[in-house]
Image (cartoon, rainbow, N blue to C red; front, top):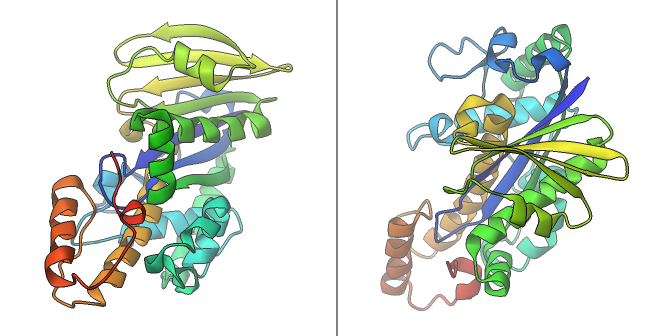
Length: 319
C-alpha cells in the first residue's frame, strides 16, 4: 500500500481573516497512485455540484462554495470525511481541536472569537451519516482508506508576526505547508509516501526552499517544469516524494479535499468576525475578507462604530 497526501490553502490573498493550510491523507494500492480517484469512487463521490444524488462532493473549494449556498457543501464534505475517521465534532471548538489544536489558545485572545468554540455546528447529521457510510464502504471496496485530515490555521496576529519575521508572506505560506509535509513524513515516511501540493505562485524550482525547510534531509530533483516539479527527500531510512503541480486542486482528489477543509475552517472563523462587529451595528455589511471588500469593511467600521476599539494587529493583515 502507498500513502497519498494532498495539501492546499485558503485565504492567501485576503486582508482579513486567517490563512488556513490543510492536508488530507489516504492509503491506497500502488496501482491507484496516478489514477482518477473520482472515477474509482464514483459510487460515493462527485466532482460537480449537479446531480450529486446523495454522493459527497469533493472539488476545488472555489467550485464547492458560493455566496448563495454558503458553506453547505463544504460542511457536508468535511463532516462526512471526519465521520469516516470516527470523529463527530459538535462545536467549532471541537472541530478546531481535531484539525488544528494548537491555534485554539491563540483564538481566545480575540474578542470576536471569545466563546466561539462553544458555538454548535448544526450539520445535517442523518444525511452526513448516510453519505459517510456509503463513502466508507466504497473506499473499502477499492482498498482505499482515509487516514487523516489536518490543518495549520494562521490567525491574523500570528500571521503578522510570522510575516514581520521573514518579510515575505509566500515564505509564511510555505512554512505552514512544510509543517504539514513534515507531519506526513514523521507518520508515514516508512511507507511509499507521495505528497501533492498545489503550486504556489509561478515558482518552478523549489530546491533551495526545501533544503532550507528540511536541512537534515537528502534531496534529489526528479523533475522541474512549468507544469510540475517533483523531488525526493529522505532521512533515517525513510523517504517521500513531493510534487508541486499546477491546478492540483482540480486534478487530484486529496488536494481538492484539503482545499475544502481549509475553506470551511476559514469561512467559520470569518463568520465570527462578521457576527461580532454587526452586533454593534446591524446594518454593517459583512465581508469575506478579500482585499477590496476588506478595505471597505475597515472603513465601514470607522464610519459606523468609531467607538468600538479593536487591535488592528488582530484584525488586519500586514501583507
